[in-house]
Length: 517
Image (tube, rainbow, N blue to C red; front, side):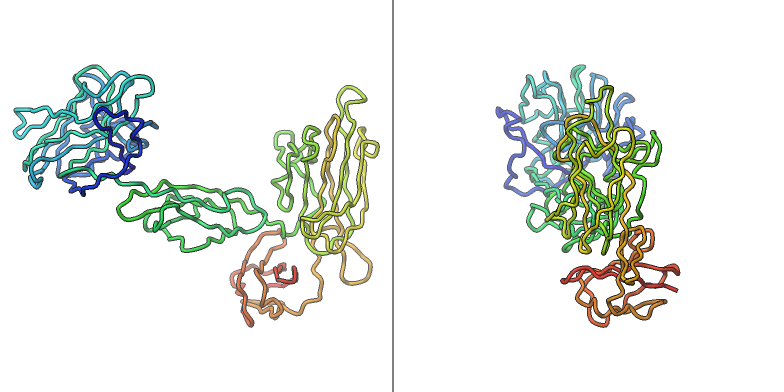
């Protein structure tokens, strides 16, 4: 319940003062209750969520604790428990309050939710020092009525006596709906605490094709940010973000910020999906699960990025939709030294011969994903509507790391795209090729020993920005940064088998196989 309070002063419209400034004089809190967060509507007699176990809470059988709904105005009652009072036989009483330390009198503050027509006059607060004689305390605020005035307000009832055993009673004087929340009794004016700004992360959550360096920031100066990466809600014992977070795998980032003498921020959530496009991509492949009921988007395939392609067809093909001409594309991020490219296209028309026309496909290659060179351009005359037409082989540059298919123009009809195959350029010089993507040329010394057991060294990569170790399924099993000369790479715990090393250096990519025994 600890949110920013809003006071509504006499004669001043509530909505004009939402988020008002803090009160200048300090407070001494004599009692407070925020009613926790009940799991359901709970009768007062059976509620166990009280903050103060030394105080007795009394209520008749129709008064209950309920969960708040989102509200306008005073925001402190949004998202927690509150007491529901909606007819004259409902009341709620607190006994055993010690306000004797107050200088002369104390002030009671609470969150009050009202309907449009109510101004608070039918909501009663009374006190007693003997449980026999009750005295009503006037509310110092006048709440507005009319359209748009229903919701929560922060109100004050001054002039409670200084007494060692005080009773306070809350009631509705008419059959109207009131809710009570966030009670606080102060010796003097309530301090209106501000709320720490909710943290933000950069980059934002989403799907990325490489590990991300995520920065958490808070607009409140001096705030401390706590976070978790497993989807659990962080608290003040959670790790503190002292710099940049390395997100190298799928995770749910949650974070909040806190600062002394301020209310904690809301919790932010960011979902990160990391698809590693440097991993081995086994080609050829089917894009869907070959089932009408299990079609999947092309962009979800590791190693591929798609844009406005549409769902996959049942035969495993991607669908280029004519309505996305000029923006529909599919990009494959390749490994080292590709050889030749082949693929299949099929035009899909409706009931007339002219239902598939005006199609132009541009296939390009790139070394960096920024500057592109045309591999080939295809139009509707080269794409069969009776069945798949096979295209290629097209020789790719040894430096190519990206291949892109782009629907440039389209009149009508959609196009199916399937059966990609890219041959791997061999380094043996015997002229043989094999189907797949990722070639590991035997030109870099190390790693050693190879085969390795617990660790290995790879001296030529001492200046690498990062080094990844993949299994043959394309999964990252180790990730290293800031490698120095003579660094020993720990591979203890890995299953025996062949793995793929890839280093990102200032001079480009270096790749190598290593055997773990």
